[in-house]
Image 1 (cartoon, rainbow, N blue to C red):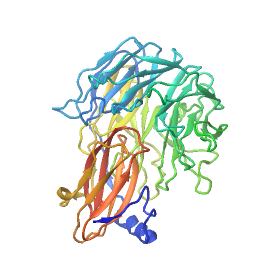
Image 2: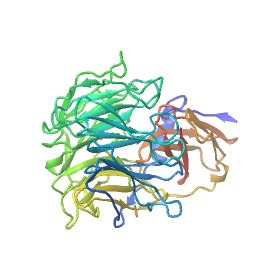
Image 3: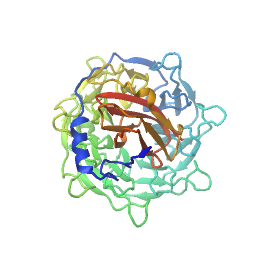
Image 4: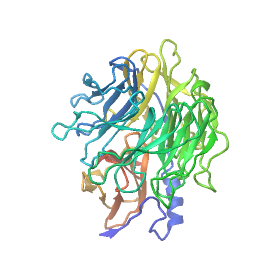
Length: 494
């Protein structure tokens, strides 16, 4: 059997790289789709929820809901129902976590293959960690708190020092500093104290994200500077991974950034920045420089949300054209409720968006955070939102028509192993009559493509190795494209 391998792009290890790329650009051109969402399904919660995440916490390959309940200092977990995917069981609440939990992240920090809960506890002055129970996956152990030398409003999780374990970065509201907590080598899932602290040049800071913006293989910091109206970028230093250079700031296009997201919106291989500009009822897009990766325009290009302002922003491919779209949580009425805003990425000019977002009813008032993921397993990313004033979560099911695909008649002959995996997996691909190449994409729960590879298909079959050692644990979707046919498989990374 022949061996064909490419780590991240079609130019790696392929002799005819240029020809293959030209073929890929034509053959795999994204198709248009009509995009709609159904009416919100609303779930009651405790008073004043703010943060929300989608993750498979109980290991059944379905995305569950995790929400912070700020007023009571608690966390609620709503499990996806096995008998009715996309519908959720009543909330199970973990009380007395204290500390005014605001935003959260859900990821496996101790390496046991089960996602854990991490909380930004604004009034408690720290990051709270609730480990997933080894005895009963989907339930959580008591909270452990790590101080951040501030009042964290937001956090992000990722391996910033390159030791293979996810670290935590927390953005402190009042002084805009970032506290970095390193995951322990000796006891994974515990974190170093005191944190390393960095200034970001802002105050009343709200949002934080991690992304390798300068393409050097190390995660950099991106922060929203609150009242300064600036976005700050702190590059991870090559000489000492896990330490950060002084902040460089850029105009967000608004007066009060509430949240930031990092992702490649224009498809050039360099992560861009999208910021919810809060009081200005817009999002700002800062495209990464083609000539100096890791630098950005002096000012963002802005697009209107059509509301008083946006609390939150996430990126995800909601219409199936393989371009990242923008989703915001908005707090103005619609007309009797707040809304979720959706900006579809342009098919003709990737990285540009409609002047005004399409607004969808969020089923409540004062919509705060949003998340994107396929909750019902139909291959279309859905939207989850929390409504602060009416104390509910809402699910907006994706009802869009993903066009120009057909079932893959060769699906039965594709094998994937090992699954679950950690370091990577191998695809055994059959001969496909009349087809010379195939594209493989690995998508995270947000619908973001985290790995894309191309394979030249040979008459005797082809083997494709997909490396995953740099990705966080969780459930991913493998999407194979060939001859206008699409095959999807779930892949579990431990």
